[in-house]
Image 1 (tube, helix red, strand yellow):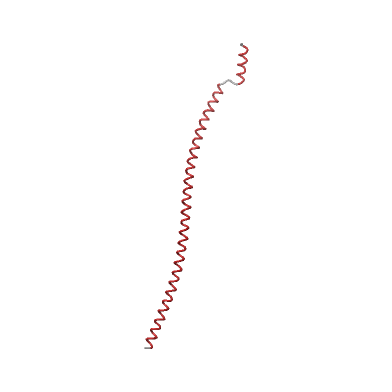
Image 2: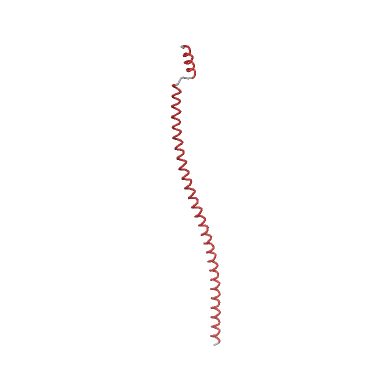
Amino acid sequence: MEEQLASERALVADTQEILRRSKAKEQEMQDQLEQLMSELEDADNNYDKLMDGYAESQRTVERMKADLGIGAQLVEKLQQEKAILLEEIEEISRENANAPSEEQLQKMHELSFLHE
């Protein structure tokens, strides 16, 4: 009977030791879970920030594309105006080449006085 009682006590002691280890392991796993949850929350927050930054950069790119399009239109318009102005300058130059010079006008004026 004493042997059986000693055996049962040893079994209870083993069971208590297993329970103690199990609780320690459970606490360790709970601590790890809390740490992982905290890291996951941080990663989620970082992801949200990155996505906000990405969305803002996309909006910036779209604005820049629109500005670039406007700039291209302005450059094209300026080139057209430049071509028109160059044509006008050439026309004025041709007219000036055909027009009498100041000196020629003076002589013509003098001649017209002489004939009067």
